[in-house]
Amino acid sequence: MVTALYVPFLIMALLIELTPGPNMAWLALTSASKGRESGFAAVAGIALGLVLLGGASAFGLSELATSSPIIFSFLRYAGVGYLLWLAWTTWSSETETSDPAMDHSRLVDWFRHGLLLNLLNPKAAIFFIAVLPAYIDTGFPVGPQTILLSFSYVGIATVIHLVIVILAGSAHDWLTQGDCQHLIRRIFAVMIALIALWFLRSTA
Image (cartoon, rainbow, N blue to C red; front, side):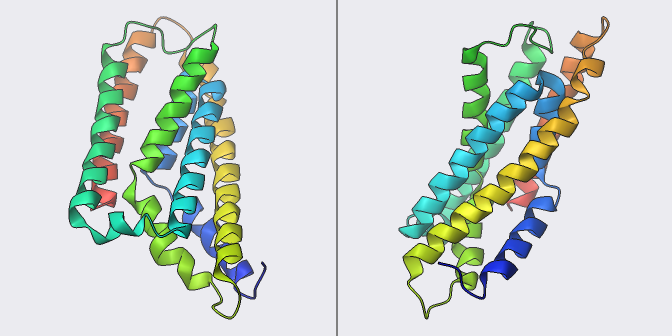
């Protein structure tokens, strides 16, 4: 159901998604280091995570995470821990930075990474609880508005994420040429660790 608040919501959502953040940096790094296919898989995981959070907010479930400091802290530290684990596996991995024969199982891995990182980001839940309700007109049924706004936000976020993957993925071939792939993998591992610290600070 479209109300007078719909267009302002779209503008607000666009501005939020265009603001650089840890998720955007991680997605760009993934696409540059692992290729566009992995980036697209991660985008699909992020999109599903947003859909799940939007559905949860419609039923008021994610309010529990934002109203309980313990649950909020758990999500925050779990997200940071997951990123640090990715950094460690990237650092210690003996595989090449690029994957010439990207198989289905690897794409599923990056889909899962995107999904989990998004679900473990408490700021995403806060958006659906603290920001989205401000654009709901109480003079009309709340349910249809919540669904429309949630899916509109997912659509905007997904388009922006796809653009990031395409742009960052263009550097993949250049980054993986020559005999410096081991060094590049270590550099990317450090960068992922720094993103984890950024994630921790941004959700504090």
